Image 1 (cartoon, rainbow, N blue to C red):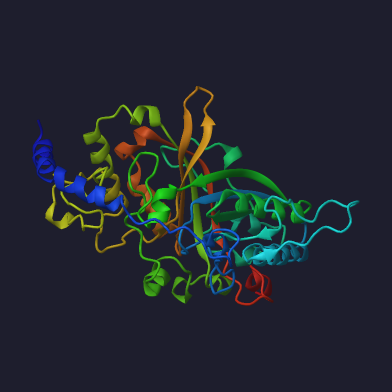
Image 2 (image 1 turned 180 degrees about the vertical axis):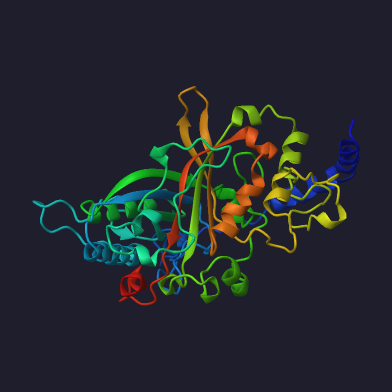
Length: 417
């Protein structure tokens, strides 16, 4: 038996009972009281709205709700003016869809209904955010925007463990829709597609989810491998850190119109869950570098404990090949991977070989695509966890700066450049 295994087994024996008690207590978080307020027809959370206006788009560092949809489109418009009109129209729909509305009754039954009817008579946003991003292909010769291309924006290429399917890659634009209920996402997506079917055509779409239990209790979401996902995320309340990691500022020396935007990395990653579920727990935890139940770094007690890599210089406790140590080695400082994750699990059914087609929609936002996602992924190349994952799609996009007033639209600075 290796020295590492001996250390680890002895350590686990000493903390098993304490960790179990901590987990049991955290699982008993208080639930929301039932709503008996006659002012509200539905539970109050349905009325929660995330402002669509601001220096930055919502859905990037705003809290993650339970449901998400990611969809990319090929543009059918032919000119810069048509593209501008499309962005103006999408921006208008975003402002409408993300606020509470009373849906007007259709008066002319000889015309198609103005909206789907999915939500009845009330449009309640339930924390809906709609985030518009653009791909590198937007800056080809179609619209005369090549000189304004964000300097790090490129088509996504394969890493060594990838098996990319062209049907699941790229797009001129991407839309990320997040909310706490699936129906509002479907309603909003249908609305946007109905209003713009002549201007853009969908390429690929995937739906994501987070455990309702974790979102409602405010705890770190657990992924389909059974591990907490996003423990190391930088706090969105730290404005200075968000400027350093997420938002494009003057320090990034991007085209001026990019200020306030962010690079979006989307990666669709299929999990080999049948293989994973037959893997010993010790191997699973060593691959992640964390204890499965508590989320604590191996050798620690609590999820948020510092892994203290400086006190483990030979990787005896948290292996050098572990996901957490490769992804963020904390050299020379904390947040050595300058990005903020916003990932979701997915479930598509079965593969052609009869395996569960489930996995992760990895999403990260960063103000430097190379220093953020790309360099992080390069550190992960060859990690032991690759035996259980197979990236098959996604793309790189640039999330447009926000619209500050109702008269603004997403991408306005690009067209004024």
